[in-house]
Image 1 (cartoon, chains in turn red, yellow):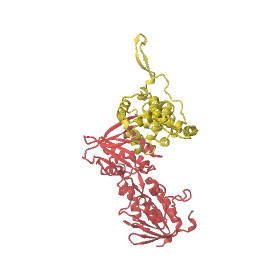
Image 2 (tube, chains in turn red, green):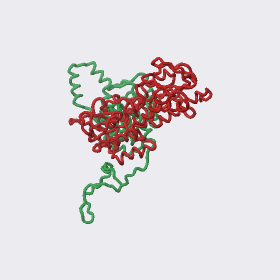
Image 3 (cartoon, chains in turn yellow, purple):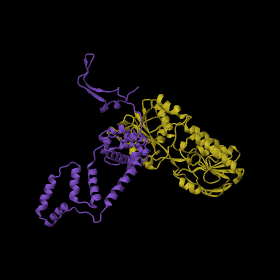
Length: 351
Length: 239
């Protein structure tokens, strides 16, 4: 293995796995470094249920991506490992791993992903205070068990409220971005809940609904029309508990111009995507820049769309900002091809 | 088409008919003039800018109508007509007439700033309430507040004499705000003061009333000051 035929891939989520498979399919070597002890990234680690838009279970869909690289002779995988040092330059990098190994690579692909927003940072919405306040990830795990129950006492919820934009679009907590996929995920989650528990009514509290592109009718309309999800234009002020143990969502229904205090059995936070909490460390290790929100900064977008601010290092997926899985996979292929092109000679690298 | 229930209960559209008989049927009473056009026909496009020119209103353009301010509002909890989110919408679009329907309650904001703390776009709704109240006062749409009367008397004396005279400020304030000049507490104050017979103090007060003190070489300073303040105000709100 030499620098001229190897690409270092950091992160084994949808984008990194996609990049690794692309590199291997072009006859080059991919060395995958993953800090967790399992492959698959957020969909596997956080236990996502059915993915948008395929409707396939995450463990099946992402599982296929994992087994594709695991069975490939051109792919070497290091689990529970980080990159601790990167020396050299485009065409001839030497990376030192936390397990002491050294990897020579002509180019590098970062698929370092994001960190889920921690709902503790919005205490008024009850997460961490009430057992029946959950995040979308937790709710997806519940869907995965095939039963919808209140964590507090195991009863079947009559009503579930999903609050959108938790940790997104909020200057108060420095999250000045839309996390792109939570609207669609939430409309999908509402359908999954209804499917498992037909007696449960699901309410989505929104400021705007952003089910972009083809997700409009496949998710938003379908959820509303076929699964009877109720959409309420209100940003909830606080979640409290009534004496009978049910949760109360308080706010203003902006369309009716009336205050609301509505009993709910489960409240779900549609949590957004933060920059990977390790981004400052990643930026330092790889010598790359971060953009103003803390995501990985990109090179010139039109001729070097997966480039970072450093020549020879590419990036894909939610590392550069909130991203859906399909796009992350496409970007993984793009970054992988780009990185392989670099192995054929410096002149191929766009500035 | 569905009719928005709330828009129908509008005092200026209620007509009172004490003796109304239609086809021999007595239908006297309060009638809602649904026939009167309820369509909004235009926006006052510069209205948002005007509110922004008042201190506190600068960020009103950021609002996306999530309702967090109204949700958290102390006054809204008392009275659902007190709706900052709705007023900000009217300000942004320039629906001035609609806004003025609530002109008698907008001043009630208690500046608890819960809205400021929760607003995801940092609109600072409390500031917008303040700016709106000031704009209404400036334009004679609401009566001047007591504090405005006091400020005006205070400023007047500063400009006129280069200094203030306590008794004059108080009297001027009472006059401006239509309060009786002789109030029980003043009488009591006078009585207790005279008990100690502070002759020097009383003489000084008397002299001040007769010979109004003025800052030395004040000259035209007051005029210049007044002109400057006026120019600044105009530049801020009409520029």
